[in-house]
Amino acid sequence: MKRHTLLSALILALASFVATGLPAAALEQAVVSTRVIYPGETISVDALDEVVLRRPPRGNTAIARMLEDIDGKVARRTLLPGRLIPISYVRDAYLVETGSPVTVTFSEGPLVISLRAVPLQAGAAGDMIRLRNIESGRTFMGVVLADGSVQVGAI
Image (cartoon, one colour):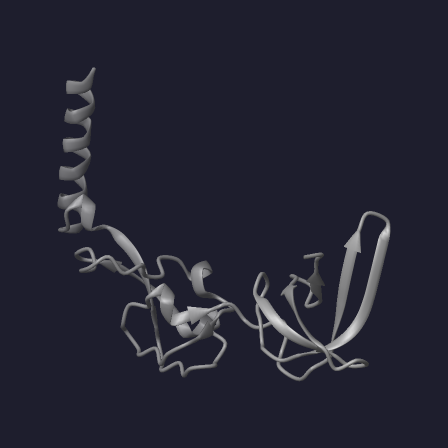
């Protein structure tokens, strides 16, 4: 059975090479930008293109493989046209901006307390950020939720 599987794999690799002129292992896909994308700019699908790699990228840097990997994310560094995009060069869009008041909630069982606070840091979903209570002026930490609010918990 193993011999049959190996033979099938060799036949598929040979068929791929004949059809494309490339070895089967080289048929990897990656995403490149079609124009210069500057730091802080939100990345959209119309500024991206998918390409087939002729050889695997050197090193062990994770790169964007599909458009969905970086669509809607924000560039941390300048992305040049035709270059592979390392995942570390993009970040999630911030849901909470510094200085824009947000709703902060604390909940434990049936008890729910909410207040307005000013973020001292920007943050994306899941980020732990520092906030200032508008009424008391005290600072505290909270986690940004997907809806743009912040959750705090008992310590």
